[in-house]
Image (cartoon, rainbow, N blue to C red; front, top):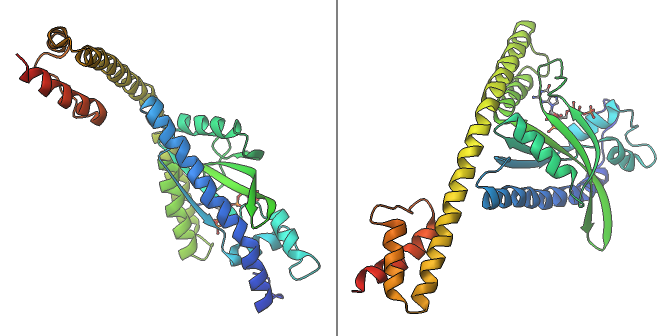
Length: 278
Ligand code: 0O2
């Protein structure tokens, strides 16, 4: 925080009021990002998003960054200036398994109508000097806080699990050493960042195979669903003989639907009734 400026009690109250729509933005966008995750899982059995976390920037960190961007704390409409200059007051982190998943998530976000992408900083293509890798998307998002509409900035960081692991460790070390990491530790961290990236590139090669397996499972589940529907419609029409024949033909005795709760329920109902019938 500024050496010369100490926010008054009134300033802290204003800053807390200013932050409220940012907290709301995080809450809303977290729900929306989880909507992408579970929608993709439902549709494809696969999601490019592993998990999402969010935070509102601490007042101290926010004022420090505002100062570094030239905001004169305490002067004129300085709180408005802080909001204009510090674009990560609301911050979300979207973590994926693979780099290609990050690109897919980035594409999905770029096409949404409820957020406007203002800027993208690609620290995967060009990592920071520390070794930090991530994609930062600065987006504009409309909140309806109270009666008024307010458009706020939000930074969405997209990281792989490996990038996130590295960044979390590095962040804590920086904190421990009060931002002044010893040179040898800085060099070791840089090496670790490159190793994490190497791992990401290796893992990307497995991604396609894993997705193909999910696609295959989806098709099997779909075709089983169609078969069960066919048997069910015969059962409803009281054509028990044909229903039994088809049931045996398609599934015999050796099928297992435990991995799919919906199919298992239908199968339990139908299978037990058909088996009881002579
Ligand atoms: P917090 O939670 O804010 O207190 P700028 O162009 O300067 O406006 P940019 O390039 O997005 O912004 O990066 P900036 O402002 O340096 O950092 C924003 C956030 O990115 C950081 O938040 C970190 O979460 C992450 N980050 C950036 N660089 C590094 C890095 O070298 N190591 C790690 N571990 N994280 C980094 P704050 O400010 O740390 O935290």
